[in-house]
Image (cartoon, rainbow over all chains, first blue to last red):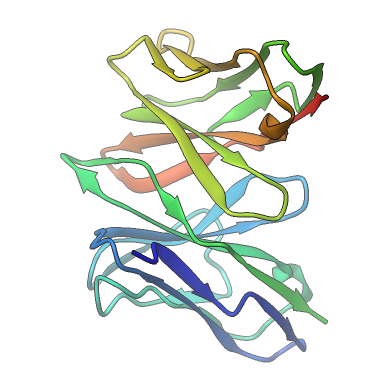
Length: 115
Length: 113
């Protein structure tokens, strides 16, 4: 199993550009999520999905869109990049049971710089 | 704001010593999880403790949970240089917050050989 994969590993954007960060998992997990991590900070939840076709906002959703058309993929779209979106982005997946989320498996991260 | 708050923010010890990190949270939870992050890498799950459990062990790790105080601690015994990393707690609240795993800001642990 590849686990959780993210592409690209690094990206530089100019202010106003758009792009999509890709995330895929091969563990048949229902739950997937996107976080951003800024220097010296913990992870902040951007968007999450509890199953195909279902997405919801996390703590810091502004400027980002997601969709979940399949169980495997959960892309994150930056609509119009801003310097404040410079960060490391992590995708994660996990299984849930009985209304409870269990251990999350993280991808290696995408380092995004917006100039 | 983030649910989990950890202390200390940084901890520096010698190899062989024990390291204790604490996490406090604000609302009721289904479970509390601890993760490790090596510099520049993704997070790795260490241990999960459910709200009806008080203590859990995994190898050199011991986690306690006090739901009355809304706090948890992670103890790493006989630390090694390879334990140098950032450690995060994360809480899973369930209910209307189902799907929202919220992380603390982490403790940076440095173990000197």
